[in-house]
Amino acid sequence: MKGFHLALAGLLLFASSVLAPAVDASAATATVSPTTITIGQTGVLAVADSDNGNLSVAQEATLSQAATINSLSFYVTQAAGELLLGIYDASGKGGRPGKLLAETKKFTTVKGWNTQNVITPVSLPAGTYWLAYLPNNNGLGFVKQNNSGNCYYYSHSFANGLAASFSASPKNCTPTTWSFYAILTTSSGSDGGGSPTPVNGVCSAVSGTAVSSAPTTDLCSTGTASSVTGSGPWAWTCAGSARLALRRQLSMAAAVRRVAPHKIPHRQPISAARVRL
Image (cartoon, rainbow, N blue to C red; front, side, top):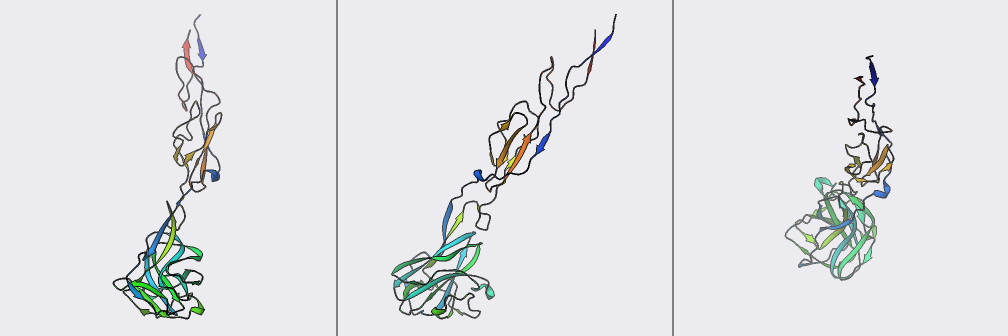
């Protein structure tokens, strides 16, 4: 007798990708080392200067990248009295000194470089700034050059401290530069605001595919891959450098097997075949 029997020659596999909530990868946050930079005149100039007691004087300086100001340094050749140092933005008329951003406490001067921390470190974007000094004694000696550099000054009592806003009508002393600079710190990979640039963790194209064993390579497009966990579905994280991570889960069929003589392709249904006996 002849007949037909229906034999199952394959099985139907379905693979799916599941997106899980973002997780905090704080343990994988990258450590960024700060870099020290300066703005202003760091050299000891040659022209003697003095008699600036109770004058608030500002010289222009350019910051090429975002950074945090930490201290100010002023070179003294003859110590006398006390000194205040500060930094202003360029919000005054025509880019002149405007708002006081940071300042030191008043201090007694000494011969040589006088370096003082600012009271409150401030993050500064790239731009033009004005370094200001205010002595209380005409006997204070320092050095300058008269070949270049924009500067402004006005009469201001030391007892009142550096003004919150520089004079709107100061006198012009351009071109003059004193031995006077600021020390700032910046971080590698800065985003322009003094903070490390966030780098999000992103899983690679292997996420969401069907595989027969746990993936071990090319897990992340960006970021650092964690260990792979699970037994199918498998899961891992791709951690960025700003405490951000994306978590993906890779799912597959509960069982994968061979059906002789053909290997079953993933995600492809195998239709039933008729076998004639």
